[in-house]
Image (cartoon, rainbow over all chains, first blue to last red; front, side):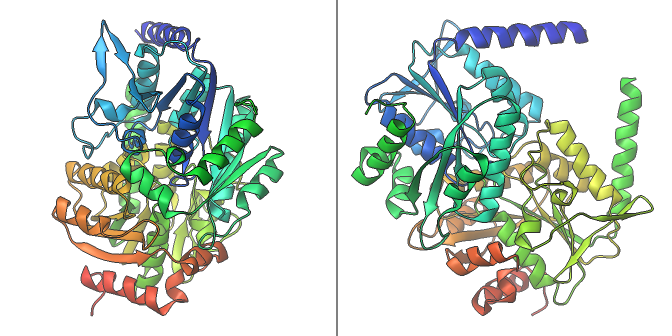
Length: 257
Length: 257
């Protein structure tokens, strides 16, 4: 019985890996600490890359998925012949567990193995098509779901997001060290919410301590907060922020200069 | 074999429940979304109550524990005769998994069952003494660790923290609905980071939609951020914030007026 379950899991994992083999360069956005701007970075990076490339965006935060809200997506996936069709939004192919929920405020109270199963299932059943990039928005922490994504999907890169504060920098380094232990290279560190209130420089310090690139700084700005509320990526409305993300994408070689 | 493991778990759970039976009123601080200020609320509420009462503070965020940083605690617990002695800081008895780590930036890469085991073990082995209040700082989300704390420790109350933004309010309602499903009453909602950048009013709206009390509003303020960095609760330095927390503690009947 235990052996059967194990074989079925391994089979599913292999199917998922086959199903995501044409999804291009896979980049996981990670932070350790919650609420530092992973989703802001994931959504805006995806929108920036989607101008010239085929981009998928996967919301791996199963119990508190926020990608749909940030992109103004309501309602559910369509499922055809057992395959899930991603929602096309601003030229991005989006899959979020939020599309499985009837009401956004219903809690998803699952233990770790169920969360991990849901991730594998969604990645396996989605009709991604050929992508140039798949951006994965991870939940906070360094446990179940980030571990499942890293071990099973094997992203090509991890981008680390931190706010300028010490407490966030420590957790960011923890997240980067987790990626390193699992042999996923770190593309670099982005500092979010930089400015008067939370200070600045933490992102650069984290990058230096980790021996990776510092990718750029996003200011604490009401326009960015408002764009999340309005469901449209700030890079599509704000030329400053668009420049920051274009700089990040060019600096890392994801976009040609 | 499976039966033996189950009996050993049940035995440990019972011991933990016995060990925490004199810890007074147990209040879990919860949010759904990460980075909205659970730890700020937990630390400042504990410091506010500790002026007149015996208070314990338990950091249940096993993989990214931040309580020690917020209270300027370095180093490990002392363990005597197999019992853990909480760190006494600002009159609060503090237990954080951070005190188990050699270096703060080492990742704790555990699957859900190990996280839950660590929570039960720490609560069981700690020499709490007689407390009036035990404040529990939960990790983000509505899965493993919040579920373990609610099912095993059975807090008397949950306090919900949200920022003013829609996306945080949705996750806050999700967290409150989880508590309700598990029969833990919600003491009320606190709005954090209120002001120009993120707006205001989300906390009041969440409280109204949930049919619970709105407890108070904490502004987005560089003094609060700085106090976290300096390792001293802001209520001990700032009379405005001290007033807000005293109001919350009095309004909920936790402190006598």
